[in-house]
Amino acid sequence: MIDELLKFFVLFFVVVEPVTLVPVFASLTNGASAAYRRKMSLKAVAVSGIVLALFALGGAWFIRMMGISVDAFRIAGGVMLFLIALEMVFARESGTKTTSEEKAEVTQRADISVFPLAFPFIAGPGALATVLLTFGTAGDDILLKLGLLGVIAAVLLITLILLLTAPFVNRAIGVTGAHVVSRLAGVVLAALAVQFMIDGLRGAFAVG
Image (cartoon, rainbow, N blue to C red; front, side, top):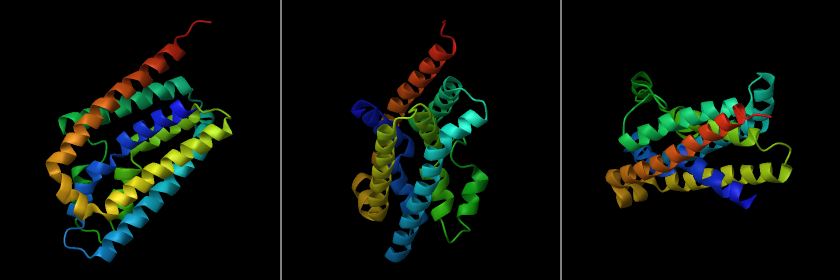
């Protein structure tokens, strides 16, 4: 179980990208007060936690209700995560997180906690797919599911700390440092995504 939790921590941390979120948050809150940054950080993480918890607890039921096999979800989730990994490695905007129209809308919003922070940056498509996939394959193992929820809480806590200290972290690592971290994480995510697809294909075409 420890191995599963560690694997999920790495995967979920890479998908959420809390380090690369720092310069984005710093630019969105440039010139704002410390109280505003604190409010946006707390609200964004809280909303993300609620959404992720709902997907974690109801994900397996949803997959069964839709008649989707776990192997099919592994393949689909792997493809989605691989696209996100390509975006991270090559620093290209593939539309998996925000479109140009959504980015333009951000500049007109006073409250950035729900959009774009909670969704799609923290609890984005990749994070939701990862949660659905992991909890969908956890079966009825209550201890494992509790451990997975603990991992989600830990990653969200790290994200909150980084957001609250965004001005200091941004000055320390800079935009270049954040891009380096993002590219390295993208390579790891690409390998994990391919493994998901391999596992899904192996399970889908298993004989007997």
